Image 1 (cartoon, rainbow, N blue to C red):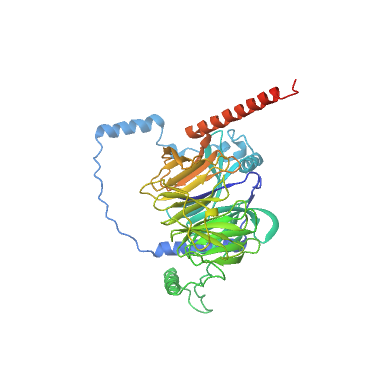
Image 2: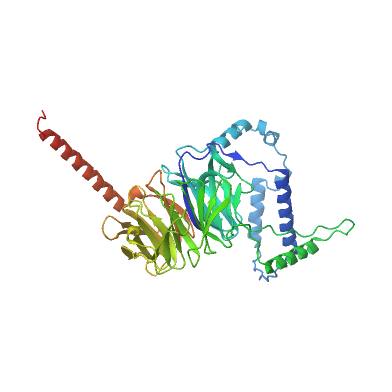
Length: 497
C-alpha cells in the first residue's frame, strides 16, 4: 500500500550517499531485538494443523528402468564424489571472473550515484503491516522505468511523507531530509543522504520510552527464556493499562498530514487524529504553536505557496479552514464541505482559490476573497467527481493550471479541464494500482505525475494524454498567431521600411 508520495527537487541529494556504519551500541541493540524475537518465536504456541497425505502411485518397473538409464547416461551415481576444480575455488584463478574487487566496488559506487538531473520520488510503502518502508525511487523517463534506489524502515505504518531541506539541529546546513507521519504520535526525520540508516536524525514529539524488564540481581539464578518472555508480557499488559506519557507538546494520536513551509523554511506543519494542528521549528525540534480550530481528525493541510503565514486545513468535521499561522486563531476563514475532507490544495493558477475533496466523492473550489470571519463560505463551484466513492486525491498541474487530476476508492484517475467556469471531464482511466490514495506532479518537470494506490505505484508522462496533447497544440497555435500578428503590425507601422 502506497499511502503518500513526494517529489524531491533536482540537485538536492548528495551525489554519493554514505553507507551507515553501525556503532557498538547499535549492534548491541540489534542483538537484543533479535534475541527477543527468537524467544517469542520459540515460546509461542505451535498450531497443530492436520494435513491429509497425498496418495502417490507406486512407480512401475518400466519407470524405474528409465530412471536407471538416465543415471547411467549422465554419470549421476558418482556425481557427489567428484573433486571440485581448484581454479573455481580461488576467485583469483577463475577465468570467468574478469573484474577485480576494486573494480566491483567502483561499479557499486557508480550504481548508487545520484545525478543532478535524476527524478527522485519519496514513497511511503506499507507491506501488509509487516514492513513499513520509505522508498527513495528514481524515475528514468527515457526507459519509463521506476526503481528503488534505497529504502529504510520506519517504526509504524507511514501515512504521510514530506521532503524538507533543513537538517535538524543545524539550521545553516542545507538538508536532504524526509519528514514522516505514521500511526504513532511522533514525526520522524530521516537523513536521505545516508544508506541503511539505523534511526532517524530527529523526532518531533512522541511517547516516553517504555521501561525495560527489571535486570536480575547479583546472585539470582538466571531465568529461562520462557520466564523472561512472561515478564515482558506482564510488563506490556501493565503499561497498556496506563495512559501513555507523551513528550511535551507532542501530538497524542496518529499524524495524518504534513506540510513544509517553503517561504519560512524552518517551519513544518502537522495535522493529527488528535484534532490538533502543530507548527514545528525544524532546527530546534520545538513546537512553536498548537492550533485547535477543528472538531475532528485533521486529515490534510497545506501552506500557501506565495504567503508564508497562510495555511489551509481540512478535517473529518466536514470543514475547510484558512488561517494565519503566525497569528494563531486571530484570523480564520471557514468553508463547509459537508463530509469528511480528504485533501486540500491551493489553485496553481489563482492564489485566492482553494480546492478540496471529500469522502463522498465531491470536489469544491472556494474563493477566500468571498469569505468573512464567522460566516462559512460557499463554493464557487462543486462537482461530484467520483460518485459513490471517496475522492482521496486532487493534483493540479503547476505549469498548466487547467489540468486537474482526481482519484479515489473507485480505482479511477480522472482528468478535468479547469479553463471554463465549471470543470469539464476529459478522461477516465484505471491505472491498475488499486484504490487511489496519493498523487503528485513534479515541480521540476510538470509533465510527470506519480500515482499510488493500495497495490502499486506508477509514474506517467501526462504530455502523452490526449487532452494535454490537444491543449498544447492550442497553445502553440495561439503563440504562432500572436507572432504573426506582431509581425504584421510591425510591417504596417508608419515609417517601417
